[in-house]
Amino acid sequence: MDGLTRRRLLAVAGTTALAGCPDFGASGEAETTPFDATAVQTAVSGPLPEVPEPFPVLVAPSHFDGARRAVRSTLDELPDPIPSAGTLDETTRAPVRRSVERAREKLAAADDAATTRERLGSLRYAQYSAERAASTWAFATDELSREAVRSRGITLERNVDSFRDDRTLVGDPDDPVRALLVHPIVESLTEDAADDATPEWDDYEPASSDAPTADDTEAEQLPDALAVGQRAAAVAMGRARLADARHLAERFADSLTDSRSMRPRFVDARESLTTTLDGRVTDLPGTEANDAEELVGSDASGVGRAVESALRKLHAHAHYFADRDPTADPASDVLARYEGIATVDAFLSLRDRVASDSSFAVDSAAALRERRSAAVTGIENALEASADRRLARELLAFPVAKLASTDAALREWGEPAIQRAAVGDRARYYVEFAALARAVPAAVDETLAALGAGGSDRATRYLPRRNGR
Image (cartoon, rainbow, N blue to C red; front, side, top):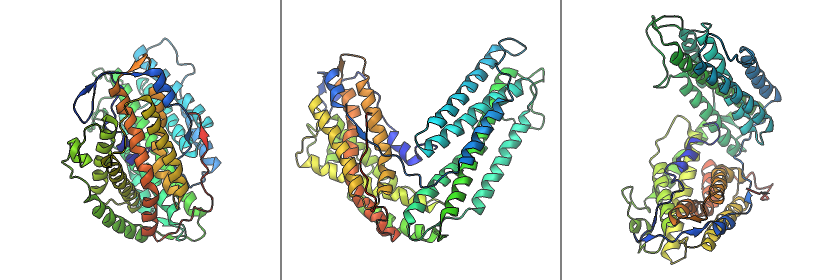
């Protein structure tokens, strides 16, 4: 993934949309009295801490410039403006125009990007859109063949394999955390580039040597043109991802004053953290547990939809990380175990709080405000207390982004009342991420110990900055 990692996307799975259905909490009784929308909007207003994902590589300005030139060069292959009349059907011209517009929008977004990660991502999508427009047009005007696009994909696949064969997991032995964070970024880009090299199920990519071309009378030119353009765009995206991966790996290696292989260290840390996670997950209900009382471990009446949902998600995520098999990338595996340990501890701490009669049910706008405040304070405290703030940010960046979108969804509700089910479904994020934040400092300590590292990032303490999201 370009922005959020695959591990982050796990937390998105199962998100319930804001709906108007009745709220059924753990007691199973319908709660039909809605919340006042204005009170909810007030409850979820206020700043959030800024927690960008760590990106410990300095990208050369020339790399950005080269990506911009590549986009503009591709757009220059098209007539400007796209003619509104001619031999091509409007259903071909319209998608081309839209792709040109998207490419230009992404170029502008790259110029305005707040972080390096966002700038690189915007430039990659600009290249995707520019190539989609150019290749669709070229194929429809008989200037590009399917075979040429297929050849590009094969070349990309070979280049990815070559990069993987040559790549080593290097790092500074005195700062293993930096290497731990860099290599999964490179690996994720490389993996996605490999995916881009392989046609998807809906790509029109005939394997036979006599595949039709655009000027064949029996070929349906329009759908083929759009499909070929999409396929060419995917390959262009893969090229851009591989170029970014290569650049980041080279820049990181060049920045090291003491460069050594980190693979043995990451493998050992993976084994140690796997043992820790396996031991910790035995305290959880089994994977088959689904009943609220099984998750709470006691009488679940009155727990409420938000808390029950938070427990359910933390429970599922914890088992997901515990069941994750080792991969060829031990750095990514270490981060997954780190997140797994934090998630297990978050579930256990939340369950203990519920069992001790702490009031977590979101049954009023005031309770919603308390849950949100607890999440914000918990994230700020976790960043301050963690022995390495980079590791803490790695785990807490997505929750902050998700809290921002949750706030926005509740604030932008268009009706005077919000059903309890809708509030409960969103409020679970405040409960879940407050519990996760409490677990982060200890999980950071576990990970640093497994790496044989001290808190190298503590010298510059995190001072929470605020924004108005």
